[in-house]
Length: 280
Image (cartoon, rainbow, N blue to C red):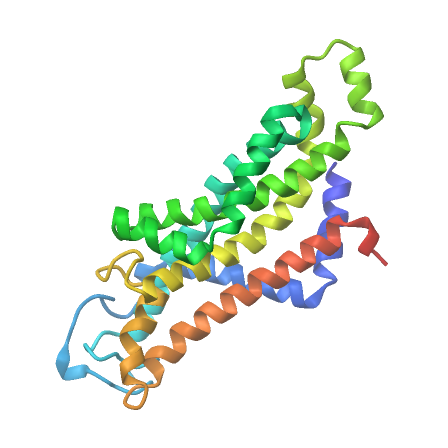
């Protein structure tokens, strides 16, 4: 197992773009964790005498329309984006993988019901669903994570179900059954490990989707709340001041773009590593 992991790691590092994306994400995680040490000012402290300060000097990324330091707000906003992305994927992945295993392995009416619910979910526009749920529950970190998880579980169900349908027909599953293993043991010990790889790859892309979703909701005023710095909220506040302070919207926009791009190239790299058909 250790040699297999080392081989995967070497193949991943040989993909320079994916490795660069991984390094950027590692730096982002470190900066978010040590945000209090890296920030140079209180991210919510207003000082109108410093409004619209251009990048440079005491404020490397400038200040916004309320005199708040843009660098500090970008760093602290990374915490929100990473927290929302990781938590939403954890919730959606747990629910989706569990339902996908049940649906794909056992089949029957349970499979029909789960597949029908997933189809209905896919037929409803996600953004409208997110706006409706958050508008009803109110803005907040927990509610944003909930609505993104509601919109993300379907992908896990479809991927897990397809893989479970394939794995349940393999000889080692039949051998486990013949040996007297319970259905629960067969699912957890033989089927689940075989669906884990595509789920890991899917999760990387879902993190990117969740970050964009949180930014979109915050931009619309339905995110984590105006008192909490977020990249989407920064864009919403800065959109009216593009002529006076281009930096107030440019840097949070770049943060979103680079974060999502890095996650996507890492996901592509993981897909190439785990899929034997793509190996050269």
